[in-house]
Image 1: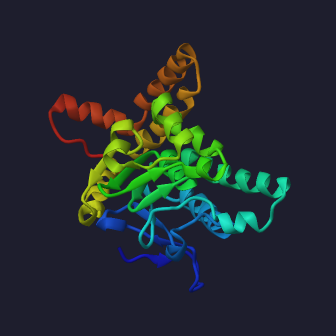
Image 2: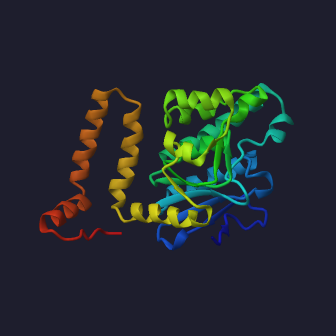
Image 3: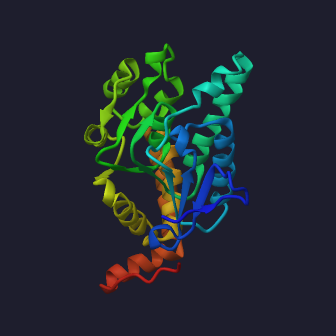
Amino acid sequence: MNASPANTGDASLVTIEPDAYRVAGVVCVTMNRPEAFNALSEALLDELQQTLTGIAKTDARVVVIAGAGRAFCAGHDLKEMRAAPSLAYYQQLFARCTKLMMTIQRMPQPVIARVHGIATAAGCQLVAMCDLAVAADTARFAVSGVNLGLFCATPSVPLSRNLSRKAALEMLLTGDFIDAAEARKQGLVNRLAPADALDDEVARLAASICAKPVEAVSAGKDLFYRQLEMGIEAAYQLAGQTMACNMMDESAFEGVQAFIDKRAPQWKR
């Protein structure tokens, strides 16, 4: 992929590629700290936050988050964290990381993690927070903070909402790596591909989403996460209201009529 800088500085920590994978509407956001395995420094967190907040307001259809170099993301920058040891500093750091993770969930666009190499600690958290994930079959995943005496509490939030409780807690308590096949089996990633075909698989998934009506996709993502935190009765009430409003949308009218007419729908792009 030929990524372009997110800003005019040569040292940009985030690069952006519009119409990535030759698919209109797909934006690839690449973390660009390859020498540090894309560890989430404060500066990288800030650039990611600014970049994703901006993209959320555009007509982009799908966002892909990738990592430059040999890895997806190695988690927080431990050297930077250790340089300023105070409770107030750590509280604001994890608050900034949480804000970024929630931005991903609240964006109207589906967000796909493109994972290669390793995704550890907050990097594994990032994979779990993305709506979907496609990984190279050589990728490895861990929440290894416990090996350093630090339980990965914030990564436990999305892990426990993606994996079974016992599988998530085993990762958190042991800090052991799991391979890509196990990550898919446990629900952390959707699809696997050989490393040299990873972009092709990401492109297929992104193109499939882009082929659907934007209103249904964005409303559906919002509904999906909101109902997860509700009791079942309230979830059904919200889902029913969402579907009723969706049925009044022009794209649904066209889609249903096309089904009745036995033709392909002609949705507005």
